[in-house]
Every structure is written in C-alpha cells, then in structure tokens.
Image (cartoon, rainbow, N blue to C red; front, side, top):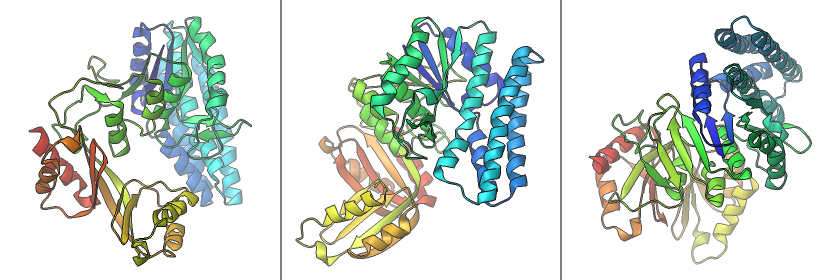
Length: 450
C-alpha cells in the first residue's frame, strides 16, 4: 500500500489537481491513499478571516470568506463545467462556508477566538480541496472514495498542535480505509485535521499534512510514504537561497530528521518519527516534475565519500541566556531550568552550558514573558530576538578532523551568537542574526559543495 501526500501548491489550481489525479491513476501499487492539503493560501485566508472577526471587523471577515468561496467556485467550474457534479460540489462548498460564516459571527459577537475555534476554522480548507479532487478522479473513471479524516485521525485536545492517540486511531484507520483499498478503491482524505474522541475538530499544527500522511502510513503498515511537493526532493540547501543547490538522492532517517527540524521546509519535522519507528521508507517527489527520482529516506543508506550532506537555516529564533553563580559546583540546577520549560509547554532547540551560564534557543515565543519571569528566580536572564539557527548536517563528525575549523573559518565575517556541537554525530549548529542567515548558508554551501 502507498500513502501519497500532496501539499497546497500540488492542489493549488485546476491544472495541479488534474496532475494529482493523473499521478493517482498511474499508481500500480495495490491500495493507494491520497492525503491532501488545502489549496495554496486558503488556510492563511481562513485564519485571517477569523482574526478579522476577533477584531469585530465582521465585514472584512465575510469578505475574506467570499474570496475563498470564489476561488473554489472558479476551480469547480473550470474542472466540471455546468454538470450535476459541479452543482453538487458547489452546494457542498457553500454549505461548509455558510457554517463558517456563523462561526465568524460568533467570534465577532463574543470577541473571543479560542484555539478550539481556530482549529474548527483552519481545517476547512482540506475538506474543500479533497472533495474536489476526489470528484475529479471519479469523473475520470477512477474508483475514488472520499473519507473524512476526522472519522479516524483521533487526537488529544491540544488544539492547534494535537497529538495522535495511536491506540484509538489505528483501529479506526483500519476500519475506515482498509475495506476500501482491499476492494481496489483509491481513497482521498485530508491532512492536517483530526478529531478528539468526543468529536471536536483538531489540527496537527501548520505543515501537519506531512505528519498526517506518516500517521496513516504507519496505521496501515504502508510499503512507502510519498510526499509530493513543489521541489525535486530534499536538497543540499534551500534553492530559494542557493541557486545551485542539489538534490540529495538518498538520506537516512536521522539526516532527514535533523534537516527537517532545522529548516529544510520540504518536510514537516514530525513526519519522520512514526515512519522511523515502523521502518517505512519516505520518498519526496515533485508533483510538477514526476519524472524526477526525488529523495528516498530510509533507515540505512550506503556509505559515500560526502562528509557534509546539507546546510539548513531555521529563522524566527529567540535565544535565552541565564547567568547564575549558583550553578557552580551545584547539582540539579539544569533540572530546575528544564522543569520551567516543561511547565510552560515550550520546546528547546539548542542548548549550550558553562560552569555558571546556560544558553538556549526557542522558536515559540508564546510564553516568553512567563518563562523569563520564572527563570529570573534562578539567575540573571537576557533575551535576544530575531535570530536564526544555521545547521551543517553530515556524517560521522566526531571521526573527522577539521570540519568545525572549515565551518567557522568560512564564517569569519559573520558574528556567531551561540554554538551547539557534539550532541549529534551528524549535526553542527550555531546561532547568528536572522539578517546573516542566508549569507551564512550560501558561504557554507560554496565551501562544501564546490
């Protein structure tokens, strides 16, 4: 069984949707599941409408809703013309958006937008796009079945970034999808969205469609998970920053995880984790260039002469510096600091310590004020904003001489705020000003790939 995920640009136009259906038709693997994102830009538009409603600008919210309606109406009319299928789809779109208009009005009247309400708003786009693509596949004669992911993608109630509840979602996924694929049907469903056990809509976080595909692949014990996107695969650097970046033909799970987390936007950071646990290969492919081989991510790859595999940058980083003489010769200090981050549900990206200080980075500023207040009880706290993590990912760094020297010599004209090395045998990361991140990536790529 194959699980194919298509991102927003892959379903962002009538032509792109046609391409998705053609790729589904070309699949020779028995049992295929397509996991679809919202059309490009729709999720942002849905959230923008909700935020306008929160500011009690209901006219702006409903205007944004009408733009979303018009986008989907145009797409349907282009694909289906004046047909019974088009009429049915238009009615379905209108019904979902009319319900959303009621929700916007409620947000506007109450002046409150909870994370639960925002999940109900932001997950609409996947329901709309997947219905259109499934109907297009059926029109082309494919045995297409549309399944609402909220039937089986059971999560906890951490709205905005829900966690899968495997004990419930695995049997539900089997029950909802396996009979269809066993009967030769092609299943069309949604990424990003889920549901609590009591039926409240949830989302897996922005970019969560990749994660959805991985979860479904694991639940169904797929032979391969394919992430179809708008680039040729995982690359040696972001091609928008480095024009001559190259495709990486194969990567290990560990390499891909490091790159995804530290800025390689082609893959959601959480995607790899379930696949690793079940040893299911993940392949990254380009929807618009399906003839390209892409990148295959698997547990073991053959050794190559390449020490450095890629350079990535993660922007929007905040650094926290904690200085405390109480650290000197003391035990348990780090545990107290980490407990504060645990209490405020904030993940740490990088960390570096000395005898009397701790430096660390976060990418979520939601609870920064509370964090800073609690941390100040243990020492002097300084905050630095508008930073970026630059990561050099490779192989067996601990066994190689001179890598760190080459990295920092290459960046001799860029100020480095913090360094984290040695925690991983495949990653050397450091923090620079956000304004310097792209230049750092270009210089490192030129050093190691030319």
